[in-house]
Image (cartoon, rainbow, N blue to C red; front, side):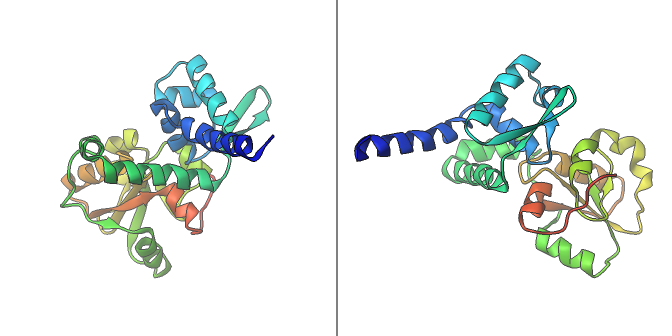
Length: 223
C-alpha cells in the first residue's frame, strides 16, 4: 500500500469512529454508558428503542472501538472502551453548542429553561466543601444502577422518579446539592426546582458523575 492509500485508509478510520456517533440514539447510548455498564435490555428501555435496534446500535459502537463487552452468564454487558470516549462526547457537545444557536436553544428547552435562581457548584468547589465537612447533602438523582456503578462519596441516592414520595428523607437543616449524568442531563435541574418549591436550600452540580470521575476525584461504588 502506497503512502496515499495508507493516508486515505487512516483518515477513513478516523471518520468511522466519528460516524459511530452520527445517530442520535447511539449518542444517547454513549451518554448512558458514561454512567456505568448496562446490558442490552436495560439500554433499550433507557433510550426507548427495541432490543433489536439497540443491539444494532451497540454493534456499530463496538466496531468503532467506542464500547467493549463482558459476559456474565447469559447476559452481555456493555461499557465505554475508555474515559477518552467521554471526553470525545463532551467535546462534541461543546462544539455543537458553540457553533449552532439552534442546538443551544434545544438545550435550553430540554433542561426546562433558565435556572437563574438555582446556583451551580463546580466539581472542584463541591470537593472542597466535602473535604471541609460542610453541612450539606449530596443528592444523586440518577437511576439506582448508575448510582451503584459509581457515585460521589457520601452521596444519597433518590432517583428523580422517587423524589416526590421520599423528599422527607432530606433534612431541611442542610443544603442539598443535586447532580446527575452531566451538563445536558435534565434530572438534577428538575430535582433542584422541585426541592426549592418545598423550601429546601438547593444547588446543583454544573457537571455530572462521569465528569467527576474523569477529573480523578474519588468515587464510591455499591449501595
